[in-house]
Length: 240
Image (cartoon, one colour):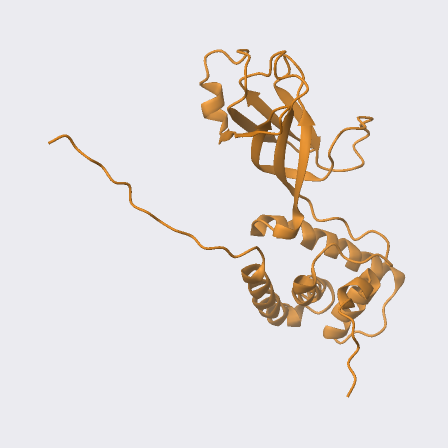
């Protein structure tokens, strides 16, 4: 017996198909244009709620920032509709995971991420030189990364290379595909059914929630790139 020979189901699974699947799980087969609009809004809210569930590895990006002498703070934006005209800006950034200072020879020097209190405690924030630390602030409309030391003339033109967490893209047009990998398609449909049940079938909400949380738990456990971890105790050699 022949097989399809394809593995692109999630690529052909448009937003309107996701909405149809969710409504069918609630026993609704006829719905209005307003119902579809309401479902797309719930899907977008669910994607935002996923950001509170932890890191999604398919939404990790990498980028470079060209350093400017005397400039310690650099800005990325959370959305694409903030009106900025900065052609070099990175959009959809939610947080910075890790960063390195990359010199003109493409040699990387790891930077340490510090919190606001540690940055505030630095005595002279205008000292210039090769950056060794960075501080991230997450605002409503933007994310900023502040370096210490401040890049000087010798560091100007070199790069800050960083990995960052991207926001899951909005559903957008009904013909779009969702910005999720195939492993998250089951929990996405279950989650939308749960969100819609609160509006159209409250008696099914608890049942839909249990199914959704179960599907999402399995997807989150599978997400990522497994690797070995080794824990080695530190050895001390006291003077005898």
